[in-house]
Length: 94
Image (cartoon, rainbow, N blue to C red; front, side):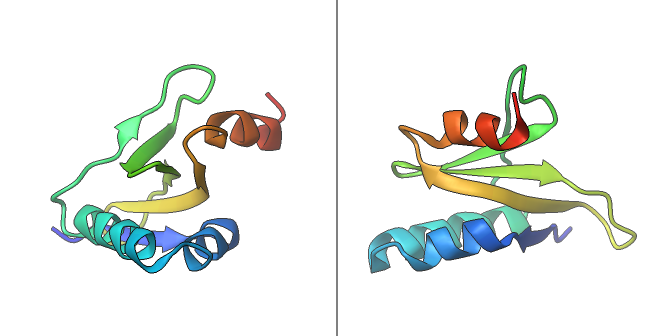
């Protein structure tokens, strides 16, 4: 079963700014989710309902989004591992 993966503007810009090897690894990881070979890990409280996808020293934060055509994830945030969760919590006002 194919899983739809949609990228928000911030994650798309983040991926575009990466060096070629990192960009390729991020794209490969997202294609793995689409093919059902990789599944993002759920995040703990206070970020319940969100998932993370680890790629090298980058983290993608995804949210499950129901769809009429089947499972779907929306990539809502991406950043380097060292700061991703703090920045995302600030964005959510947590």
